[in-house]
Image 1 (cartoon, rainbow, N blue to C red):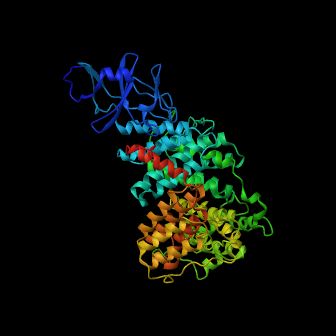
Image 2 (cartoon, one colour):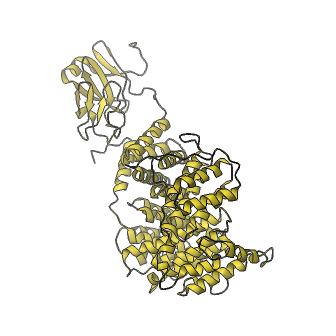
Image 3 (cartoon, rainbow, N blue to C red):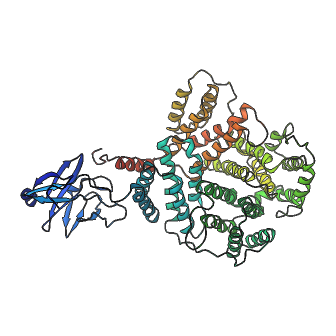
Amino acid sequence: MSSESEGFVEAVPLERLEAEGRELVSRGGVAIALFYHEGEVRAVDNRCPHMGFPLAEGSVEDGILTCHWHHARFELSCGDTFDPWADDVQTYPVEVRDGTVYVDPNPPLERDPADHWADRLETGLEENLRLVIGKSTIGLLDAGVDYREPMATTLEFATRYREMGWSSGATILGCMANVVDDLEPDDRKRALYTGVRHVANDCAGEAPNFDQPSFSTTDVPFERLKNWFRDCVEVRDADGAERCLRTAIAAGYDEAAVAELLFAAATDHPYLSTGHVLDFANTAFECLEHVGWESGTTAGDGTLAADVLASLVDPLVTASRSDERSSWRQPIDLVALLEDVYGGDVTETSGLEALAATGEGALEADRAWEPPAGFQETLLGDDPEAIVTALADAIESGASTEALAAVVTRAAATRVAQFGVANEFSDWNTVHHTFTYANAVHQSTRRTDAIELYRAVFDVAINVYLDRFLNTPPAPIPEPGANEGEAPETILEELLETFDREGGVNEAGRLVGAFFDAGGDPAALKRTLGHALLREDAGFHTLQNLEAAFRQFDLLEDGASGPPVDEHTRRVPMIATARYLAAHFPTRREAEQTFQIASRLNRGESIHEG
């Protein structure tokens, strides 16, 4: 290098560096560790890229620099790490002239930060490295990358490296994407970090997935493909079902048609795997809405959409079926009640088709179905035959799948909002599963008007009935106007404080009611609830619960789905999720600790000094 090289600054006398072997200097605002090793001068960033420990305090032997904190090892001349969890360390150009070492503290970047963090994200996924995932997700969003890009990478990983197919990790990823716009900027990073780390953990140690191809012909009528798919699922033939599904996608059938195919199979038996199967399917479609139906291409010639939806097959064919459970058969045969409406069997729809045909002419063209007086009370009652009859009458009166799903979802949310804390803690998940399943059913009816989704609506209603004892006695839902006087900002602070201690279930519900009474902005409440959730080690169900509540609140708020509601009903989803969150908080917040470390490292702060 020329002694006049631009950017080089004086660092240290060569003789002193030779004698000491190392020297720490600060030039251009950068702490640089200089080493004299095997007759060469080397310079690296003093901050270990793993957790920021000073590399000047490390050791050098045989061309390897070892950090003494976690023993990360680096090839000294280029900075590349031996350990994927550590990342490469930045090296700096050096030159020696007139017995003095010069260093360039600001060399041109070798790679765009977005490319670097995208590569590190893949490493974090492959190795299930929580800190690497934290630094990568933060780094990508800080670099201006849209969250959809790392989401697509993670979604592809979730479907490629889990032989058992779609699971909780991918569902959490979708839930976090669904609420990202409701969050503060830092919490958007937490949301992406949460989704990615759950996918990595879900796939850790799992066998990879190997695709079944579509048929070599796409000239198969849709109804035939749909019947083939349902038949394969019925006999638990995963390979055959996957080929049918991939063929439907390859044939170019639109999203609504593919959704019909999947949702039909997912409702051929009631409440598959406590609702997870349909919920998984709905979330898979929601994920594709974020990243794009035609987004990317995975191994082979399949689109990401094909691989994502094919990952739903295994959960479908291995699902537990509620019509085989005693609670659905005794002391009242609930399945028989449904079969009478469906057309003689749980897999039938002929009876529903007849009811819907009558309903088509039941309303005037400019009117929509509205529930009759006492409909909600019937859904929350203790007479399953009356519930089934009320739903059948609603279809015959012109209730669409979407309108009916909206109403039964309100009943399911009420069960959570009125959950009695004297019940066993595990019973929170009973009412939770019904609510999140109801939300998935409701969202699915907005995607396709498939007749089979009426069966899912009945599933929700039967579960609301089965959950009735968990509202005995019902916890009171704060009525509008019951709490007034405090400022909305003060109430939100109190809500966060409530989540910091155990046993605040009813208080959390009261505070949400008080917030609405005070005229608080729902967007501020969402930001607060989202932050409370993401600072915790929240599990699958807690993350799901908040997302479903936000979705249902939004639909009630804008009147986009289902009959109009009063102020009391509008509040129920937010009160319900606040109570659910309070029941599960606080936690150890281990994930938040990792997130904070990753944030500080990416900002260049020192971790080991406190």
